[in-house]
Image (cartoon, rainbow, N blue to C red):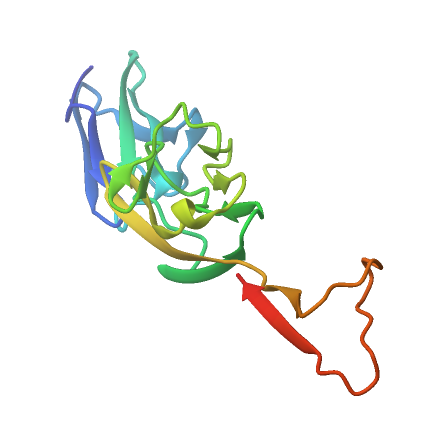
Length: 212
Protein backbone atom coordinates (compact mmCIF):
# COMPACT_ATOMS: atom_id res chain seq x y z
CA UNK A 1 0.00 0.00 0.00
CA UNK A 2 1.23 3.50 -0.84
CA UNK A 3 -0.32 6.79 0.22
CA UNK A 4 0.49 10.36 -0.77
CA UNK A 5 -0.61 13.51 1.04
CA UNK A 6 -0.37 17.26 0.94
CA UNK A 7 2.24 18.72 3.29
CA UNK A 8 1.36 20.18 6.66
CA UNK A 9 0.04 23.71 6.50
CA UNK A 10 -1.60 26.58 8.36
CA UNK A 11 -4.70 28.47 7.28
CA UNK A 12 -6.81 31.35 8.53
CA UNK A 13 -10.13 30.86 10.28
CA UNK A 14 -13.01 30.78 7.82
CA UNK A 15 -10.95 29.35 4.97
CA UNK A 16 -11.42 26.03 3.21
CA UNK A 17 -8.91 23.19 3.52
CA UNK A 18 -8.46 19.99 1.55
CA UNK A 19 -6.44 17.12 2.93
CA UNK A 20 -5.38 14.74 0.17
CA UNK A 21 -4.43 11.12 0.85
CA UNK A 22 -4.49 9.08 -2.34
CA UNK A 23 -3.56 5.43 -2.05
CA UNK A 24 -3.00 2.37 -4.18
CA UNK A 25 -2.85 -1.36 -3.50
CA UNK A 26 -4.34 -4.75 -4.35
CA UNK A 27 -6.99 -5.24 -3.19
CA UNK A 28 -7.76 -1.52 -3.21
CA UNK A 29 -7.44 -0.14 0.34
CA UNK A 30 -10.09 1.57 2.43
CA UNK A 31 -9.49 5.03 3.90
CA UNK A 32 -10.17 6.16 7.46
CA UNK A 33 -9.64 9.71 8.68
CA UNK A 34 -8.76 10.56 12.28
CA UNK A 35 -8.36 13.87 14.10
CA UNK A 36 -6.30 13.74 17.28
CA UNK A 37 -6.65 9.92 17.23
CA UNK A 38 -10.45 10.09 17.06
CA UNK A 39 -12.24 8.76 13.92
CA UNK A 40 -13.99 11.41 11.82
CA UNK A 41 -17.43 9.92 11.21
CA UNK A 42 -18.63 9.66 7.63
CA UNK A 43 -15.23 10.43 6.06
CA UNK A 44 -13.80 7.62 3.94
CA UNK A 45 -12.74 9.38 0.72
CA UNK A 46 -9.15 10.17 -0.32
CA UNK A 47 -9.85 13.91 0.01
CA UNK A 48 -11.08 15.37 3.29
CA UNK A 49 -12.62 18.82 2.80
CA UNK A 50 -13.32 21.19 5.66
CA UNK A 51 -15.23 24.40 5.05
CA UNK A 52 -15.13 27.52 7.22
CA UNK A 53 -12.22 26.26 9.32
CA UNK A 54 -12.14 27.06 13.03
CA UNK A 55 -9.94 26.20 15.99
CA UNK A 56 -11.94 22.99 16.42
CA UNK A 57 -10.48 21.80 13.09
CA UNK A 58 -6.87 22.30 14.17
CA UNK A 59 -4.77 19.38 15.29
CA UNK A 60 -3.06 16.18 14.18
CA UNK A 61 -4.76 14.43 11.27
CA UNK A 62 -4.15 10.84 10.33
CA UNK A 63 -5.07 9.13 7.08
CA UNK A 64 -5.21 5.36 7.60
CA UNK A 65 -5.35 3.21 4.46
CA UNK A 66 -5.59 -0.59 4.77
CA UNK A 67 -6.53 -3.81 2.98
CA UNK A 68 -6.20 -7.51 3.75
CA UNK A 69 -2.46 -7.41 3.09
CA UNK A 70 -1.46 -4.48 5.28
CA UNK A 71 -1.89 -0.80 6.13
CA UNK A 72 -0.19 2.55 5.87
CA UNK A 73 -0.67 5.76 7.82
CA UNK A 74 0.08 9.37 7.06
CA UNK A 75 0.34 12.02 9.77
CA UNK A 76 0.24 15.76 9.37
CA UNK A 77 -0.68 18.84 11.35
CA UNK A 78 -3.18 21.56 10.55
CA UNK A 79 -2.91 24.96 12.25
CA UNK A 80 -5.83 27.39 12.11
CA UNK A 81 -4.92 31.01 12.69
CA UNK A 82 -7.59 33.01 14.54
CA UNK A 83 -7.33 36.76 15.03
CA UNK A 84 -7.84 38.27 18.51
CA UNK A 85 -11.24 39.73 19.38
CA UNK A 86 -11.73 42.22 22.21
CA UNK A 87 -14.36 41.37 24.80
CA UNK A 88 -15.49 45.00 24.87
CA UNK A 89 -17.51 46.29 21.93
CA UNK A 90 -16.33 49.83 22.67
CA UNK A 91 -13.16 50.79 20.82
CA UNK A 92 -12.91 54.34 22.19
CA UNK A 93 -13.61 55.04 25.86
CA UNK A 94 -13.49 58.34 27.72
CA UNK A 95 -12.73 58.20 31.43
CA UNK A 96 -12.48 60.88 34.09
CA UNK A 97 -10.41 60.25 37.22
CA UNK A 98 -9.95 62.33 40.32
CA UNK A 99 -6.32 63.20 40.97
CA UNK A 100 -4.51 60.67 43.17
CA UNK A 101 -6.83 57.77 42.35
CA UNK A 102 -5.88 54.37 40.93
CA UNK A 103 -7.13 53.62 37.41
CA UNK A 104 -7.36 50.25 35.63
CA UNK A 105 -7.74 50.10 31.82
CA UNK A 106 -8.83 46.64 30.60
CA UNK A 107 -7.67 45.08 27.32
CA UNK A 108 -9.33 41.66 27.46
CA UNK A 109 -9.77 39.33 24.49
CA UNK A 110 -11.84 36.18 23.93
CA UNK A 111 -10.19 32.80 24.45
CA UNK A 112 -10.68 31.70 20.83
CA UNK A 113 -7.40 32.93 19.37
CA UNK A 114 -4.30 31.36 17.79
CA UNK A 115 -1.43 31.92 18.00
CA UNK A 116 -1.27 33.86 21.24
CA UNK A 117 -1.17 37.57 20.43
CA UNK A 118 1.16 40.30 21.63
CA UNK A 119 -0.13 43.21 23.73
CA UNK A 120 1.35 46.68 23.33
CA UNK A 121 0.31 49.73 25.35
CA UNK A 122 0.98 53.28 24.12
CA UNK A 123 0.64 56.61 25.92
CA UNK A 124 0.07 59.50 23.53
CA UNK A 125 1.29 57.17 20.73
CA UNK A 126 4.60 56.35 22.49
CA UNK A 127 5.34 52.92 24.03
CA UNK A 128 5.01 52.78 27.81
CA UNK A 129 8.30 51.96 29.53
CA UNK A 130 8.25 48.46 31.00
CA UNK A 131 10.25 49.45 34.07
CA UNK A 132 7.78 52.18 35.02
CA UNK A 133 6.33 51.15 38.40
CA UNK A 134 3.69 53.89 38.42
CA UNK A 135 2.10 52.66 35.16
CA UNK A 136 2.31 48.93 34.46
CA UNK A 137 0.64 45.93 32.81
CA UNK A 138 -1.00 43.17 34.85
CA UNK A 139 -1.09 39.44 34.08
CA UNK A 140 -4.42 39.86 32.27
CA UNK A 141 -2.87 42.62 30.10
CA UNK A 142 -4.80 45.45 31.73
CA UNK A 143 -2.94 48.72 32.29
CA UNK A 144 -2.78 50.10 35.82
CA UNK A 145 -2.13 53.76 36.58
CA UNK A 146 -1.16 53.58 40.23
CA UNK A 147 -1.92 57.23 41.06
CA UNK A 148 -3.35 59.65 38.55
CA UNK A 149 -2.11 63.21 38.21
CA UNK A 150 -2.03 65.86 35.52
CA UNK A 151 0.93 64.16 33.80
CA UNK A 152 -1.01 60.89 33.39
CA UNK A 153 -3.92 62.35 31.45
CA UNK A 154 -3.95 61.74 27.71
CA UNK A 155 -4.60 58.98 25.17
CA UNK A 156 -3.86 55.35 26.07
CA UNK A 157 -3.92 52.73 23.31
CA UNK A 158 -3.87 48.93 23.61
CA UNK A 159 -2.85 47.04 20.45
CA UNK A 160 -3.46 43.28 20.33
CA UNK A 161 -2.19 41.40 17.28
CA UNK A 162 -1.06 38.09 15.84
CA UNK A 163 -0.51 36.69 12.35
CA UNK A 164 -4.26 36.59 11.73
CA UNK A 165 -5.22 40.15 12.64
CA UNK A 166 -5.23 43.07 15.04
CA UNK A 167 -7.58 44.75 17.52
CA UNK A 168 -7.20 48.22 19.07
CA UNK A 169 -8.92 49.91 22.00
CA UNK A 170 -8.27 53.52 23.04
CA UNK A 171 -8.85 55.33 26.33
CA UNK A 172 -8.96 59.09 26.61
CA UNK A 173 -8.15 59.91 30.24
CA UNK A 174 -8.93 63.24 31.90
CA UNK A 175 -7.73 64.01 35.44
CA UNK A 176 -9.67 66.40 37.67
CA UNK A 177 -8.98 67.80 41.12
CA UNK A 178 -11.59 68.26 43.83
CA UNK A 179 -12.08 71.99 44.56
CA UNK A 180 -11.05 73.33 47.98
CA UNK A 181 -12.06 76.62 49.59
CA UNK A 182 -10.17 78.71 52.15
CA UNK A 183 -11.60 81.78 53.88
CA UNK A 184 -9.16 84.65 54.11
CA UNK A 185 -10.33 87.22 56.70
CA UNK A 186 -9.98 90.93 56.09
CA UNK A 187 -9.37 93.53 58.80
CA UNK A 188 -8.09 92.78 62.29
CA UNK A 189 -7.73 89.12 63.21
CA UNK A 190 -9.03 87.46 66.31
CA UNK A 191 -6.82 85.60 68.70
CA UNK A 192 -9.35 82.80 68.33
CA UNK A 193 -8.21 80.75 65.27
CA UNK A 194 -11.75 79.45 64.78
CA UNK A 195 -13.26 82.79 63.87
CA UNK A 196 -13.17 86.57 63.96
CA UNK A 197 -14.21 89.10 66.56
CA UNK A 198 -15.61 92.44 65.45
CA UNK A 199 -17.33 95.22 67.24
CA UNK A 200 -21.01 95.70 66.58
CA UNK A 201 -21.70 97.65 63.37
CA UNK A 202 -18.09 97.29 62.19
CA UNK A 203 -17.59 96.06 58.62
CA UNK A 204 -16.35 92.48 58.16
CA UNK A 205 -14.71 91.40 54.89
CA UNK A 206 -14.16 87.74 53.98
CA UNK A 207 -12.42 86.39 50.87
CA UNK A 208 -13.09 82.84 49.70
CA UNK A 209 -10.09 81.50 47.81
CA UNK A 210 -10.85 78.44 45.64
CA UNK A 211 -8.33 76.07 44.09
CA UNK A 212 -8.71 72.85 42.11
